[in-house]
Every structure is written in structure tokens, then in C-alpha cells.
Amino acid sequence: MGILVIAEHDGRQLKPGTTNTITAAAKIGGDIAVLVAGHNCAEAAQAAAKVAGVAKVLHADAAHYAGGAAENLAALVVSIAGGYSHILAPATGFGKNFMPRVAAALDVQQVSDISAVVSADTFVRPIYAGNAMATVQSADKVKVITVRATGFDAAGEGGSAAVEALAAGPDTGLSKFNGQELSKSDRPELTAAKIIVSGGRGMGSGENFKLLEALADKLGAAVGASRAAVDSGFVPNDYQVGQTGKIVAPELYIAVGISGAIQHLAGMKDSKVIVAINKDPEAPIFAVASYWLEADLFNAVPELTAAL
Amino acid sequence: MKVLVTVKRVIDPYVKVRVKSDGTGVETANVKMAMNPFCEIAVEQAVRMKEAGVVTEIVAVSVGVAQSQETLRTAMAMGADRGILIEAPADIQPLAVAKLVKAVVDKEQPKLVIMGKQAIDDDANQTGQMVSALLGWPQSAFTSAITVNGDAADVTREVDGGLEKLTIKLPAVITTDLRLNEPRYVTLPNIMKAKKKPLETLKPEALGVDIAPRLKTLKVEEPPKRGAGVKVADVAELVAKLKNEAKVI
Image (cartoon, rainbow over all chains, first blue to last red; front, side, top):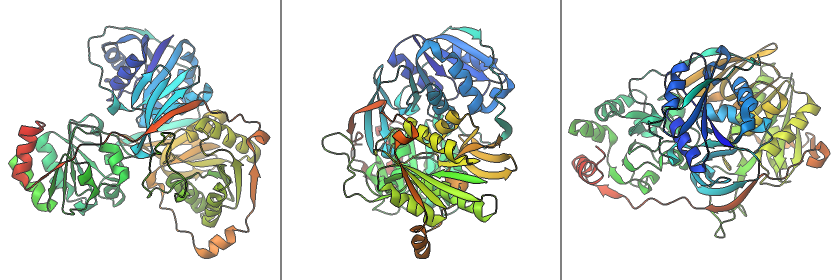
């Protein structure tokens, strides 16, 4: 019995999170097959074949898999689930969308968002926005699991797996994909960035995020935000770091004008080094910061940008 | 059309959660409880659709302990027409909840099911997608906009890089994201009115659903604590620390 990993990709490359999921699969132990399903995604299938530890790549190509359509993708995974003891996907917007459908169809209680593998049937996962860690054991025959990328290192290159074509399943016709409006940015993606500069309500306006962008560009960093900043309309929701946004763990996380609500800490407290800049000496963010600077961000941020 | 919304009773999101010293779970005795925030958004959406004349009846469903009646009363104070409580232990797992909701959907035949995308206690983010799969219906998870057009709905979903637009056939299951709406506050007159609305209580056995848990929680622990941080006096000291001590820039 092997392990099936469902790859998240953009047609050409694997998205961050997929290689971490392959590492989680390796910790469980067993032959790892990677399913690359999408539209015009042969290049991504080749990329998956080069990841260390991958034994086989299954490549399914059809228009009705574009955008990771949940109904069609879940049906495809269920159709090939028979040969596997574990089915894994990254706990990103992609994996969270279709994996519970796979689990329900297989009559399995999914284990969401695991941050560690204890054994082939026992996993650690955060609950209550990461304020508690639960160790859970699955009694299901097949384990359906989503993986928190920050809990596992990314698997490197060095594989040379065979790529097998997998016939596409039928289009369920339940849903029609009308396109995506993706934020355009030359900066790295939040979940892949080594450095993140994030702003909170203290930024005061969307216009003031330019200060953070200048700092981010100096550092080659991504720009993020707290839910408060998103709710205030300063930046779009895909900037959001937190329990209900993205979970990140970069080398360096710079929190500017962020008070540090539990909800936000849940998304970034595993970062290696955390810097907090806030003028409120009581801000809870200081409790998780490696270095904290009590200062007015409108002076400190330009000064920091100039000093780098 | 008829809409079914689900609501879950959880620890109030503003309460600091404490892990029990025996490692069996988190402390829930004498802790303030509330409706899961994403469920509030689901109820609000249904009520707005009723106010807009798209929806004719809103049925609120909760799966949980007897006190979940309070959560259903809140949903009815917001504008749901009636409530159904399926009595089950507080730690019932998402697959079992999904099967129970499906059983109620089979009975009630709504055209739309609106659910929160995730409960802020177990953070599983599964139940809506599971209900949709069990029914063989389309889904729109993490939804930030809904427009119903006859037998289909145009939806906008929050995805990692931005937004995604879909047209889904009805009946369908929708799970809510934060930007879908801002839930209203319940008023005292509406709380009083809600007390008179019908609330039915069912048992899982009556719906023919096995709710035996599949996951066993072996232990619950505090997350690892971060070491104490260092206060820096100014930007120059911060840059020096990041370069020489942390070596991250």
C-alpha cells in the first residue's frame, strides 16, 4: 500500500506546500505517488517527477480540472483511492476545498492540517487557533490528511520518477469555472517567502502600506496583513495571515502596527525570528517577538528601510 | 426557496482557551460560549437573502449538546424561522455531523445549504464540503459573494492568490468566508420573538446515523512557548541584532 499525494500546481510548477506534503508522506513511510491533475499541466507533472522521494507521478489532464475544481478533482481521487493507505494534500485553499469531499466519499474522518507525524496512524494537529495541540489517532482504513506546510521541510530535488498518464474522469457538470482574479505582484508569495513584512490596523490606511512595500522590496520580502487591516479595507484578503488566512513560518517576520490578536498569532508564531514594531508597550505581539521596538511605525519603518 | 443554515456552539472567540492539566482537552466548564463566527455569517447571509425576497424560509440546524438550543435561539433572533437540534456529544466529529446534516436535508429538501467554513474550536474546515459530497451537490467553499439566478448561483470564492468565480447549479452547499457580510446584532424584541419560534429536537438514531468517533484524541497539550524576546532601543540596534545575532538579513 502506498501513499498518494495530490499536488497543487500552476500548470508549470508545484506550488509551495506540495513538497512539504511529500516530506510528511515520507515520514509516514511507503511508496509515494503524486497525482498532478489539471489542464495543460504536463510541465508540472515533470516537475513532480524530479522531487526526491517520489516513486511515481500520475498525470491527468482535462479542462474540467482547471482551477482545482473540487467536485471533479475529488471524484478523480476517489476513483484511484483503492490502492493507497494514505491520501495527502497541502492544507491550503486548494487542499481544504476538495479533500473533505474525498474523505466523505470514502467514509473517512479526515485529519486536517497536521503539523507532525507520530506514526502511520497518529498525527499532531493544532486546534483552537494553535492555542492547543491535539495528538489524534485515526481508526479509518484509509487516512485522508491535509498537511500544514510549516510543520515539514520542503522535499528537495533529485528524484527521477516515471510519469504515467491517467485517463481523466467525467466532468460532473455541477460547477462552471468562470476564472480567477489573482493579485498581481512581483514580490514572493506569502507562503513561500523567507521574509514577510506585515501590517495591522496601526497602518491607518491602504496608502500607508507603501511604507511596508518599500521595506519589503529592500529585503526581497512578501507583504502580509492582519485580519484587522483586511477588515478595515487597507489591503485585499489574500494578504491575510492568521487562523482564517494563511499560515506562514518564514525566517523573519516583521509585524508592524499589529497588536497581536490570538487569531493573527495563530498564523505566524512559528516564524523563526519575529520582529514587532508598535507604539503600544502593552501590545500582546511583544510576547511572541524575538525583538521588539516600541516606536511610532511612521518614523521607524522608513528609518529601517534606509538602514538596510 | 428554502434555505438551511447550520450553527455550532463553540467557546467564545474572545475567551483565552486553557488546556486541561490532565491533557484530555481544553477547559470548557464555566467558560463563555457563543455561536461560531462563521456560522453567524451563514445565518446573516440567509436572512439577507430572505429580506431581498430570494428566500422564503430559513431552517437553522445545530448538532450538539442540549445547550445548543441557545445557539439556535440566537439564529432565530437573527431571522431564522425555525430550529432543529440534533442532540449529540460536544466532541462529535465532522463526518458524523455531515451525515446528520445530510439526513435533515433529505427531509427538508432545501435548495441551498449555507454553512460556516470552519469552526473555531477544532479548526477542521471539513463539514460543508462533506455535506456537499454526501448529497452529490456542487459546493462553493470560502465564499465571499453569492447571487442566485434561478436554478444556479454565481459565487465568488476566496482562494490563496485572490478570488475565483464559479457558477454552481442549485441545490448546492455554500460555506462562508469573512468578507461575505457583517452579521447583525440581535435586538431584545427579536430575542423575545425567537422564543416563540418552533424548535424541534432529534436524536441521531432517529435519523439512522452512526456517530461513533473515528479519531481518538490521545492527548491535548499547550503549544511550545517561544523564548522571551529582547526589547531594542532603536532601529540601529534592531538592524545590528538582525544582522549579527539572528543572522536573518
